[in-house]
Length: 144
Image (cartoon, rainbow, N blue to C red; front, side, top):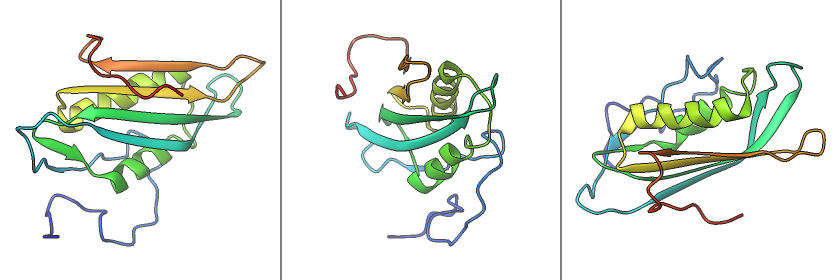
């Protein structure tokens, strides 16, 4: 595969994770099929963050589904970006919406959906889903 100059992580043995989502960078590369409406489904089953009230760890399964336009998200940078939440305190709903906002900012997809299925706390299991553009009923993640 030809080298893509704008990618700084792919093919390199970088091990230092970003300290926070503010420090992380979602890298992108040109969509090789921009005229086709196809979906990319990304899944991170072992996402971790911190509760902003208790400081206790939160765990989730994060799923991202998007239809790319001109650019696609590079998965190693996505891995580093998602890992940057590990020591970051944020409410579950804010995490899902932040991931969607950062994805849209990075690659401007035609459509995108981010779902976070968080581990139960106090007997309640929370699932949050955010969509871009606002829900139109066309893009669906597989049912859990």
